[in-house]
Image (tube, rainbow, N blue to C red; front, side):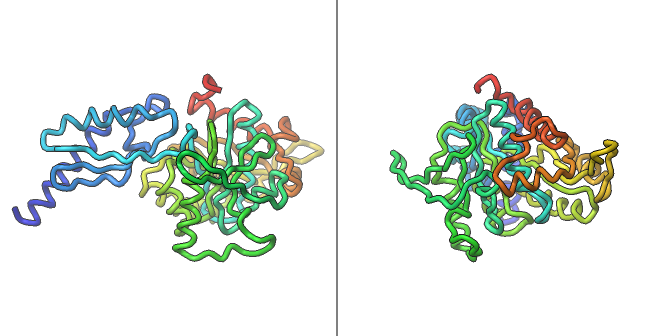
Length: 345
């Protein structure tokens, strides 16, 4: 058989495998495991199928279901499935932005706090290696990371603050010093934080990604069972353009965009209640329409958001009935409704 015929056969078999895989439906999100990015690194070698399956702690049944579905392949001698999961974690979500300064980390902290207020067990992984400031936003000073012994080896023990389990790359650095890590070291650190943290039982693990689309972001997305991403932007067109580049990265890996959060959407006049779009308007709605993804919330400009981040008191907790606090509660409610986990909380 010529190389051309062999390549054609492999491509044909790969399409056949994908067709079978698309019959496996995730019942909560009502979509197939391929479209949800749960199947990655699919490879056909001779008469064998290799793939990685990225799942949450409550989705272990997919392993047997996929094995059963692919047993219908007449030419396949064996299917090798590598399970990629974070033990004890049901849903892993990424919080991402196309550029820095749009309030991504602030949004991640307040969504985590709002989820906790509604009864969810929440963890927050601060993987922003260029600006790991989530510990400060939750009121945590310098703290040592503990390492514990488990049946599967040594693990980092996350810190718990305001009922949220937290792990941050910033806890590894000296105060006020940059994290000057290059490629191989950066990859190793990030992989360790994804694989070697003893989170316990969590309903949601939020991963605060670095802004943009560099090595760190790609490593996190490829190596973790992220089942969806929330994109944070501001209304102006320059921010929207940067988010579009971010979207391309997620589409390459197959991770779906769950929704858009537009930060700094408007300023509310304290006297008359009039809304003024300081940074323009319509950007979040435009992006949501392009992606056919929901606009989860439009967060107003509120000085208490900034002061809450500086002092470790998220507005979603301290002023949950404010206009901004209500938006974060609205986003958390939408996520709880999407993944239907309240019945297990």
